[in-house]
Length: 391
Image (cartoon, rainbow, N blue to C red; front, side, top):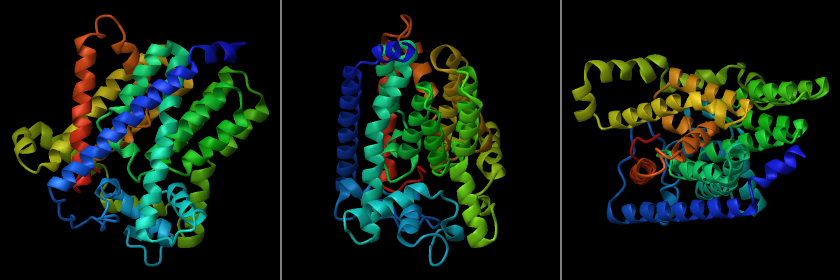
């Protein structure tokens, strides 16, 4: 009876409404990406950037496979190690997304060229995105009703760094698996939840945060000891399998962290910018324009942190725990790419939507948030498409 009443607050029409928003918003972004590249030439490739113009004759598509997409293409094309041009042979990137890219190309009978693999990455990301939006709406609607569900999906669609959900990156896949794991847990399907969490942990390292979150839900729902053991075994399986692979192939179970260190650690990604913004704010604003991207990342992180106290009243405890772990850990360890790394913090969208549906916020403040976020999303989409340092 419990699950029936929950389904009642998330009618099929809600999925249709939010899917319409998702499709319209992404058609608009695709047009902006095409138009900006049609009018202005893309930037030269940065010295530390792999060549990433895979579809130069198709500007609307080419702009969605920049920066890290080149690493996924390299892994999908030739695997880890060997001639892979990515640092440490590409082991700094988890395997599920490039495996799906290669699989998709093979299934449709295309040769695994960089262009075909980049196209596969874009298609997979966008298909996952179309699954993410209605599931995000449902997750929020279960606790707070359809109005909050709609706004949660809308906020996800217009998040400033939300264009990464449509680029050839693993963000959409990871978020789809995360949402699927929580919805399966809500129905008491612990084996499915554990399997999806395991796939998520084979997509991104932060998938490990699903383990304590799902175990908390299992305890609260009085799942059997067998189900809890199954969750504990399956949820981290993707990460453990990848670390075992790098141990067998490269002699180190921690090869992922060695590769990630190539791009810097806490000193470069947090301390440097903290000192820059605190001690030299003028230089931060008028010097290297890439500092503005970090400033926007930092502002995004602060907003997410500010919304954490509202999770208790708007999402299930497991979702709240996962969201809090992801936001706090990512904020403490890196401000580079922080806006992208926070996209899977799914509880924040429900918390923000619940806030914006309150009478004091539902008028012009809500409109200002949506318009401002949409403008930033459009700007960052065009910058990314031109190869600017929005990573």
